[in-house]
Image (cartoon, rainbow, N blue to C red; front, top):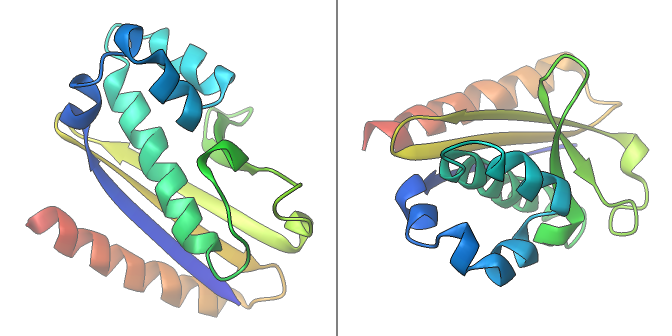
Length: 144
């Protein structure tokens, strides 16, 4: 079993909601470490947008497995500074059964995230086919 989720967000959507004036909104969606990471940059909005896209993509990918919410999902960086998802074990009790992959990117105007959730028993070929299909979908979305 594998699931794919993708989301693309306009960064301007977050710029129209300045963090300092909308802290309640941001705290509903992002964890404290995510907020601290984003606001540590001069322009936090691309980082907020790409993390929001990651949460949306994760919710889509996890939809057939569990009902996940923004607060259940946190974007972190691993030891090599690669993004990864931390999903609340309360919500997804058997999280160790799944491999969750995350890819993030943003331009000046848009942020995009791709999440692949695969049962660790899946063959590499099945996952590669899913990624190829997802990449085609993303390319069509960006071309709009």
